[in-house]
Image: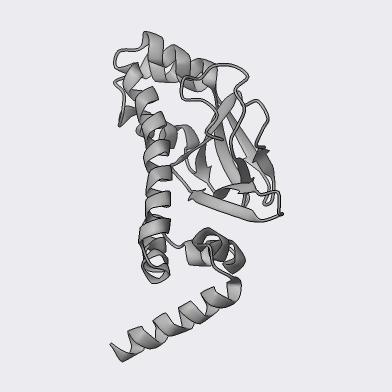
Length: 201
């Protein structure tokens, strides 16, 4: 089994200067949690007190429209943080904007917003960690919208594995189709055409 906290600590140290003692104190306030495939770990409209850091598994961020459609905005895999875009200031009782559901069995580190707020306010360069966490989500969402509106389906399909390695083998095809805003039949035909094109080239 991987050292889950070491994965988190490597992520933190890439953004913030923290001593071993500070990291140990940070870790003690976090908790390793496990979720089964299909579990809804964040629900849109509900207060959010924690973010999560994935050490094993994959989740999807999505909303459900009044018409009953599921709109998937992104996936989160190992080494990525997960939240419902509820708070970039880590205040209490802010509600999540999106749902987060496990696509696989997942192991995560649950990080209370309170400890992140403490790091921002009390650790040297801690504000950089908070800013990075906020900006990473904003940039990712903007990229999704820009790519959706400016790139062809073929370009977005070809970029899938670059964005999310091995996703084709980990995520149901209907879920990938939803992310690409196409039907499963369209996705199947697209995959067939890409295989034919690659064999010719």
